[in-house]
Amino acid sequence: MKSKVVSMDHYVIRGGNVLRGEVEIGGAKNAALAILAAAIMTDETVTIENMPDVRDTNVLLDAMAGIGVHIERVDRHTVKINGSMVQNVNIEYELIKKIRASYYLIGALLGKYREAEVPLPGGCNIGSRPIDQHLKGFRAIGADVKIDHGSIVATAEKLIGAHMYMDVVSVGATINVMMAASMAEGKTIIENAAKEPHVVDVANFLNSMGADIKGAGTDVIRIRGVEKLHGATYSIIPDQIEAGTFMFAAAVTKGDILVKDVIPKHLESITAKLLEMGCEVEELDDAVRVRYTGELHSTQIKTLPYPGFPTDMQPQAGITLALSEGVSTITESIFENRFRYVDEIIRMGADIKVEGNTAIITGVKGLTGAHISSPDLRAGAALVLAALSADGVSVVDDIHLIERGYEDFDVKLRALGGLIERVSDEEEIQKFRLRTQAI
Ligand code: EPZ
Image (tube, rainbow, N blue to C red; front, side):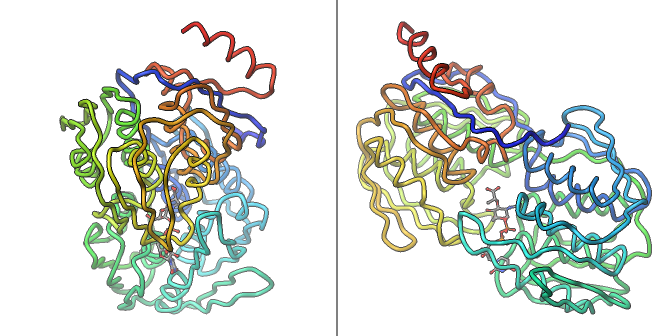
């Protein structure tokens, strides 16, 4: 499926409905992006299942096809990949601008071909997002890495395992170095490694291709390099951030949602905060049920690397605290510009002050609908939750940013009772207003 051209679509939402029912969670975007890149490290065919059909994965697949990877889309969530025909190891700038995670192709191409040239990813709307730790790791295993005309050029006669220490806990650097080291000679140890579930998923995927990686999920990952990797069939873990977003949707709309096809353990820090805020959370084998119990209490949240509270859930928690009785604080310790939803939700009546990397939130009784725009992927999703809880109609612009990481977001919310539609112009917005007035 070609990645859709960015259309200036909008969500139009009439808030106030309680969300009730069941929602099925898709594959983890942040595991899928790395796994798709890693799939080209073998010349045999790899089948990836439970892949989320979102803009980011579709753009990355288009890009991989652009360097000669054979891509067969079996269905929305299943793709066969064969990297034997990769012609060049030079990724186009246009591509990396669209999807930062194409930098995972450096680790994959360096590991397999001992060379890679990928344009430096720019910052993005949540912060500067340096990749110094990625480059430090590649150099540690023997690659010569230089920045040349805006591109990272990594080459290596040989890749030799090394013992390296990450200066900061980085999901991307941990995964990228793990990929390159999986085909280096000898043993690599990555200390201060990221422990996110998607780091573990990438390690499990590489091991299913014949790699020898131990310790993923702890802060010390041990990799014994192998000569070759073989084909595999692999199913991606559920997306803990999509799951968490729907868990908070139950809280803000005073609802009751069964979030299915999840791994409850991955959601523990999210569950803990919803309980503190007064929600009821029931953990089942592969589902969690979140129920609003009549009020929401203030609390304190600090984002941390896993297993701490995820930075990707910070905006959704902020919106919920804006509706919780009392004064709450959220401290964003991972990215430097992740409060961009605050200006938008203040226009809906929230009472939030941002001081440095902390937001001080005074709960209000309710929000009112407004014309808002999505500043980035997770802030956009959070603003949709705010609009679903608000009195009146909201229009959310720049929803292509939301669709980077949420599959059928409006469809899933509508199935739970949300009055939300994807529209392209003013006329459709007016029709929605009239049609939903009565409801
Ligand atoms: C991944 O980004 C995710 N993206 C992000 O999700 C997520 O917020 C982040 O991990 C943290 O969990 C993908 O997986 C595609 P980091 P990544 O390297 O790997 C600093 C979403 O909404 N750092 O763990 O780029 C960095 O500045 C996205 O789905 C360095 O200093 O995050 C940040 O402060 C948003 N040097 C901190 O580490 C480096 O070389 C954590 O970044 C790398 C990172």
